[in-house]
Image (cartoon, rainbow, N blue to C red; front, side, top):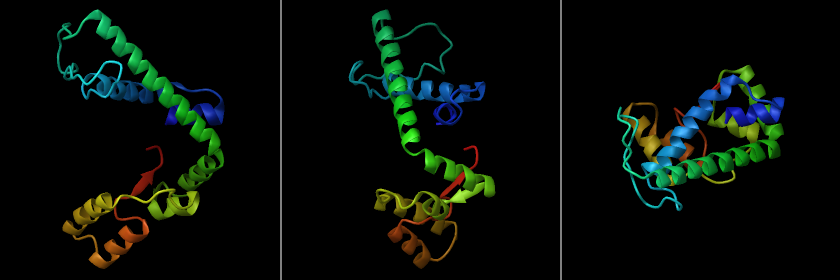
Length: 164
């Protein structure tokens, strides 16, 4: 995210990107140790170790090394992919930044006008879920919500905020 964009735009990263690293490290670690989403470690779950204040780990030192290596691979691979995508779409990145400078929060319609139509449609299930939750809050007409779902435009709550 932000760290990769700093590298692409400024050629260096600031200490402000530290939060990105912290969050992505926790996500990758959970992917491997909690959700069993690693071919290297396997479909195992060691539970969340964050809540525990003990030094005990329910796995060996060898497994701990595998986990560390797998987390590192996930992060470096994902970071390289993010940098590549941002470099390939740098003009769009600048256009989006300009749009966010003009208005602090932009919705899905604004994204389409800046970036063009999505290369793929939102899933019907996602639109039904979002539309149903907004209908229950009395956000608008069912007809307008259905039209938004059919053409892939915004529904209330579809927004991007500057700095998010």
